[in-house]
Each structure stands twice: as C-alpha cells, then as structure tokens.
Amino acid sequence: MSADAPLILTDVEKHYGGLRPLRLRSLHVRAGALVALTGLDAPAAEMFTNLATGAILPDRGDVRLFGRSTAEVSDADEWLRGLDRVGILTDRAVLIDGYTTAQNLAMPLTLDVDPLSGDLRRRAEALAEDVGLSGDLLDQPVAALSAAEKLRIRFARALALAPALILMEHPTATLDRQDVAPFARDVRRVFDTRQLAGVAVTADRAFASAAAADVLQLRPSDGELIPQGRVLGRIGRLFGR
View 1 (cartoon, rainbow, N blue to C red):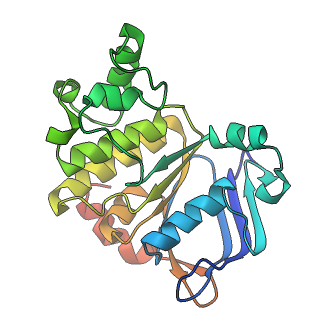
View 2: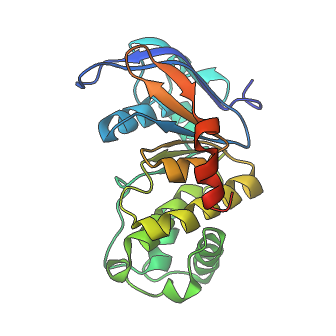
C-alpha cells in the first residue's frame, strides 16, 4: 500500500476553529505524482499538513502515511523517522536573513553552518542546481534575495533529506505572476526526476494545472474532492505543460 499510495486520507474530519471542520472524503496520493488541492485557505492548509504528518490526529476518519495509520504511532522516535521521509514547503519555514543562501540550504542537514564545510557546500550547490537556483546566489545573504529565490530555497530545503513525499502550503502566494510558470516547470521536473509523491495546497490554478498531475477542488460542506484537470487543461498548455 505505501509503495502505491504514500498518503491516504479516508473520511477525515478535524475541527480547528474555522467556519466549518476540515473534511476530506477520500484522497489517495500515489507515488510519482503531485496532486494540487484547491479550496483550502492558509489555516486549513496548515491543518492538512499537520494531519498528513501525524502531528495532529483527526477527530474522525483515518490518515495513512507510508501504509501506517497515524493513530497507531505512539512512539516519538517512530513518528520522527516517518517525518524524515516527508518534506514540507511552507512560508512558516524560517530563513535566516543574515546567513548566505548556501548556509540556509544546509540547515536541514546541520545547524553547524558557520563556517560551512566543504562537503556541506557541495551538497548546498547540488540542491540549488536541483531547484533551478542560480549558483551566483550561493554566497548572497538571504535578505537580499527576491521572493521567487526565497521560495526556491524553501523548496530545496524540503528536498534536502531525500523525502518520498512533499507537502506544499500555498507555494506561489508570494510570487509575482511572471515567476509562477518557471517555478511550476521546475516543480514538475523535480517530481518527475525524483519520482516523488506530493500534495500542493494552492489557490493558484495556473500553478496547479502546470505543476500537478491531478487538480482536485475541495467541496468544504462534505469533503468531496472534485477533479478539475479537464477544466484547467488549456491553462496548463499556456505554461508549457
């Protein structure tokens, strides 16, 4: 089961202080595919991440991460081992403005980044290349970078531990529109190359259509996920999909 669908949510409901509970009737995220999930605001996206990783348990229903129900994980060490297989792309991930791009890229690997060892420098360079981040930026302080460049740093950090599953929370919310298409193409390339599974919670339909294999619209009243791929096909072609 975990090989075919690293993440499965079935009849999930979670009260979290929103206008209504977060409900998800059925979501299967298969290996090698990014699913775009629309219809969730920022708090709901954070709650989805917490449910998917087992940081929070649903009030009802079942979440299975790599084949194991999150409700069955009672040992902190086991939970952390599972979490190591998940990369999270979110604006909540702190970047250190005074550190260089290379130092920030190395932080998922170690906090001992000042100075940066030769091996860590090489690994940071590889991550930067993987996400389309210019090598010229490696020695620049993060404070001097654009929103698009900071997003790519966060994407690279989500990939740093070679996860099998990537979760994204509104990744393009801070981007200028001209930066969405290049980022979407690089996301699609990375997922195809690494054969990753993933969920991108997004309100950006252009990004969703260009980057994801499937686009699903959440109906909040009952948690039904409605496929949107056919509707958005023409948008995807505009982005070179």
